[in-house]
Image 1 (cartoon, rainbow, N blue to C red):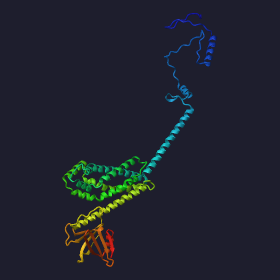
Image 2: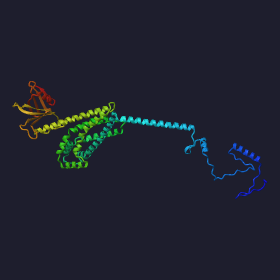
Image 3: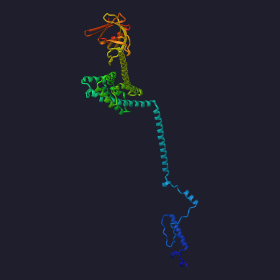
Image 4: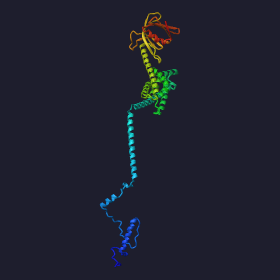
Amino acid sequence: GEGRLRDPPRGGSVTSSPSLSSMDCKKETDRLESLRKTNSDATIPLKRGTPRQPEIAKSATPRPESRGERQANEAAAPPRPRGGLRVKSTVSVQRSKEEAARRIQRWYREMWQTLKWGLLAAKLKEHKCTKKIRKKRETIKELFYTERTYVKHLENCVTHIVNPVVNGQVKFWKDPAQQKEVCEQVFRNIAEICGLSVEFLRKLEEREKQYPNNSKVGDLFLSVMEHLLKCYAIYVQGFHQSVEYLDTVTNKKWVEFLKQQSNELNKPLNSFLILPVQRLPRYEMLFEQLYDLTPEEHVDKADLRVAVKLVKEVNEDIDRQTQNRNKIIQIQKMIVGCPNLVKLDRYFIRQGEMQYVRKKKKKETCYLFLFNHLLVRTVPLEKQKKDGEKYEFLDMWDLPECELHDYTYDAERFKLRVATGKNTAEADFFTSGKDYWVIDLGAWVLKKRMV
């Protein structure tokens, strides 16, 4: 019968289950299946008397899928994101593509600009205008650097040598007038040149801070040039005399002082004294370079043109004076017993042999040397000496105190007459080049008469 007990399973306990008809089991199964389709997540309570399904142990392994099932499931399933990221929508993917395209376009534009400016920079670097600008900047730097070095040496000379001697801090002679004369002959106006150079350097340093907004240099030189060039001209004219006079000073204290200062400054006095002489040609060279490298439309072009012109004129004048001084020294060495003819404002005009008569005596031969303000009369020597001396000194006539008489009826005769106090001297000269001598003498004599 249905109520009979069954044998219990091995290792288990005896349980009893209610009895259901086959029709009732079928209805209950249909009801549960419909509920699962309606709400799969809902918890379906079991009706009393419903047989429980056997529970699957958690440790039990599921049945492996076949190859066909796995391929069908993969084809039906949506794409799985990589790296665990969520799948982007169609709009997000489109925006990402547009952003990537913009980045690529931006990169290409930047690369093109870089390439374009690089090519332009290379062309500008090789352009002649760019080379001129670069050379001009180098020339300005050279002007600044050399001016600093020049001023530094001048200040050392003035501070350690010139000022102690001029101010009397160091005394070498008992007579102050003698020490003052030595200072004037040796140092001349080097202290004044130093002061003007310091001012010019200060202006250059201020202008250097304004570069490249303000690259003018000519206006700075013109502001100090008028006074500076005059000082340079005076100094350079007397430089050789200063060096020669310095060699004649034999005072022991003076010599020891100069030796001590030369050791401290690592330069002898002659090396300091020649600095202004060397600086003027350097100015001319630097300003000529700046003028050539400056475009015509530049605001500094006119000032540089004036600066170059004035410096060149001063240098040419100094060169003429130097050549003239060398000529006077050469003439002085040719005359036996000749006094010192070298002066700052003296220059040679002409020379020549001629006949002269004094106090109605016979004609004698003489050789004249004409300078501005001065006429030197000599006689040729019978035998030339080894030192190159050819003439013997007779006398000198100061032309501003002389009268010139031009004999119009005689093509070779003129007369010079000089009166110094109660003494009067006169002489008639005869030469074939009378016209040239009368013109040159007439420019310097006190009075000229036509006889």
